[in-house]
Length: 234
Length: 299
Ligand SMILES: Nc1ncnc2c1ncn2[C@@H]1O[C@H](COP(=O)(O)OP(=O)(O)OP(=O)(O)O)[C@@H](O)[C@H]1O
Ligand SMILES: [Mg+2]
Image 1 (spheres, rainbow over the protein chains, first blue to last red):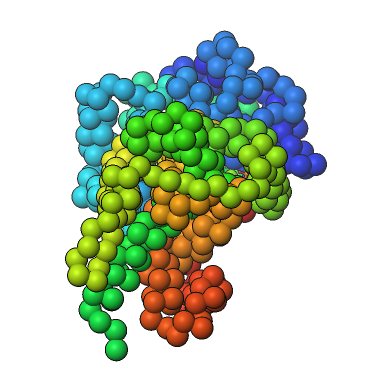
Image 2 (cartoon, helix red, strand yellow):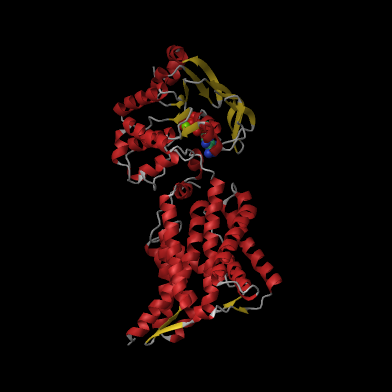
């Protein structure tokens, strides 16, 4: 479904991605793990088109999208819930969700999906007409995910969705992510909480200073001694 | 000291002037909200609107409805062209580059106007039914004044509803908050910016018509001072905020008229200076303006 081939990305003169190759198959949950500054966020921003590679190619459903502008990628089915949530704080919760469905015109489908998101995150329903900036951190995270889901994506990218959430909420969140996946959405997940991420993923990539250091079956990586030492705090 | 009719008359004058400032301030404020650009060329759109109206009136003897609508459309079109040609190529440039470019665009438009239209001021005469005055004792106003105020209110209400209620309006507010996140929603940000320029310039175009109708005289530099004052108005109201721009416009209209109307006549010559004094005072008390939010966007 998604393929990156030798993707190199620069911030000015800083080479943040040094030739990343990875793929995500339809129906999978794939995790990107790695230390701070490894290039996980940069990878997601490149896939959604906010950053353009200096070299390398990105294919989505066998189509070269390397130079497709970001707003068109949303229309192709790629949604991105960015690091730090980035909800629109001056807009209401409802308006944030409406923007998630910006490119859709199926009124009934949108209505249905809003209700689906309320069933995933009942807290949002109570806050519908409040400015999103007044939500708690956890609620903002739910809104960010809900907003990305409103695009009805084929591929959902989540950048550190558990950041700043209470442990009990983290459990719930990962259940929701699995749920979303079971309902047919492919997921590319970036997490600090590598253990949790690996336990719901089929495959994973370990990034280190802009390169893929290891890749493979999530369960195997979870058992790998190097990975355990470096990322799982064992 | 001052008679009631005199006070009422000043009140009326302030509302008329404030309406024009409000319309010009909206465009400046909306553009600033998205691009962090103080668009110096905005006042020149006002001038273009006024000249368009003049030619429609004198050369084509067009009906006044046309004379109102066409300058709006021409203003909107020029605003879009300026954005496309001058500002869009600088999308990733530092904000100061954008600012300097807008100064250059302003000078370009003004000098072009001098060459093509001549620097000579021209009389701007509105149809007689619009210059007809109504007298109520010592109070008087003209039909054009009524038209200015009603048209402003209608435009502001329509625009507010558009920005509040429609999906594109929500996208405009989102883009003002974060361009990158707006992209992730599937919003074509360039189109939203273009629309913002179109709307703002459209209002500046019709404000130019109002300004010309009110003062009866137009010249190539006529946009400079109203542009500057509208900037002050939008800062006072909280730059980036639509209700702020409207409030700021009326507040400035009142401040200016009352300054001239109620203080000793010797001070009248300082009215433009007073406007900036007011700006400084407001910013000292409320640095982000009346409706403004503290700046939180990354640079
Ligand atoms: N806007 C930027 N300008 C310059 N360099 C940047 C920028 N954003 C990230 N970088 C650099 O690029 C590299 C990769 O950063 P990235 O944010 O992709 O890492 P990450 O894996 O997401 O880290 P974290 O776990 O902290 O979120 C880092 O060295 C970082 O310092
Ligand atoms: Mg990151």
